[in-house]
Figure 1 (spheres, one colour):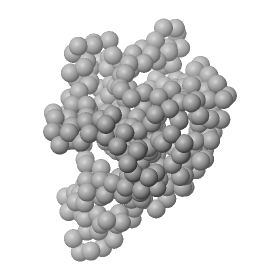
Figure 2 (cartoon, rainbow, N blue to C red):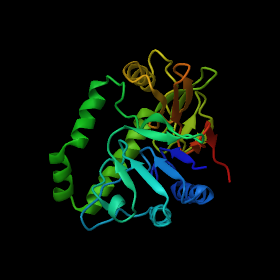
Figure 3 (cartoon, one colour):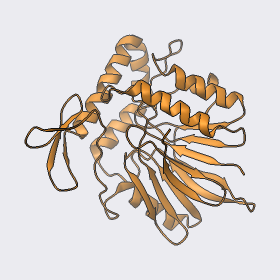
Figure 4 (tube, rainbow, N blue to C red):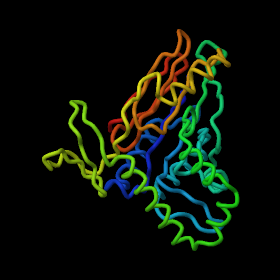
Length: 285
């Protein structure tokens, strides 16, 4: 039976972590373990920590992953790539050279049933959905602006542009993770190089991507979006998103379920639909 896989937020190339190359290799091992010409694979955004395509220049790194994408599509595997807020600047390379189907917006897809027919799933990265933060929406509109993209491509030399993008991505992660709260209520601090310490200065972890905890059903943007969408599209069986770096598996109604996929920096989470069941798993090799 055909299977469908979903994963997101690998942030390959991130300077906020020390093991990007190893995570890239692990991601390739995962793809090798699930490859089948009858299966579909959906990457739901922020696979790269920063990605910008120039007409004749390919960003340094990622050769193992890009090669694996080409292998899979050459074998007939259907690979879908949804752009995230870190890798929205793809203009044809992934489609033309790697053979993937690129999506720039969330959309509905059909999940085949083993008994025939299909279920409907709304999938995408999830950035901006249900989020009323004006600052984020303004920044998102700038990043999506054709003029700003043209200026970035034609004013900045590729080396300078990539350096700027990678530094911005690192500072963004550290800025949103500078202060976190542990499960027991202790206040923790994340330094510029990703070292987590407690109030006494004890080092608890290094180079990990901390995420804002689950806000609850009444405040979590992706929950709010999904519930609103479900009111207008009652036949939607699944909502599957990335972006938040936390695992969420929530029943919205008796027939509808929300999955947020975690990330591929520490959790290595993916979802699999096998024609009957949807499962959220963590890859270990």
